Length: 92
Image (cartoon, rainbow, N blue to C red; front, side, top):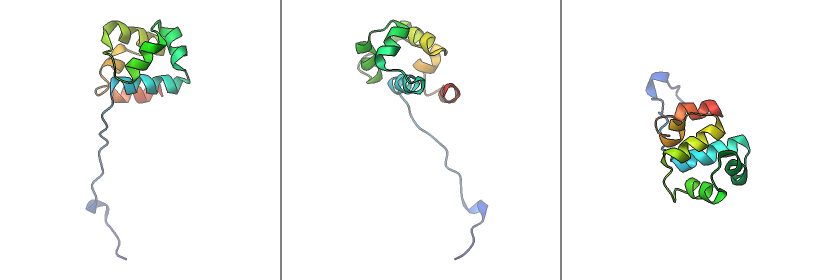
């Protein structure tokens, strides 16, 4: 078996697309909250939390602000997850 030199390999770059609904679900689960608990904390019904997590409704500014306040983060992390991936990791 021949030895490989480090220069023979190129590191893979992580590139994962994440949706707003996935961010909401991920943040909620990291906190250990149910949809009902998140609903209580942010003032959005648990039905709408489910719809948001499943990408059935648009988030909108007001909902993003309500969720962000409950999570203790900036609304941009929820509204623009493709730009804020590193910030999401910090919350975890």
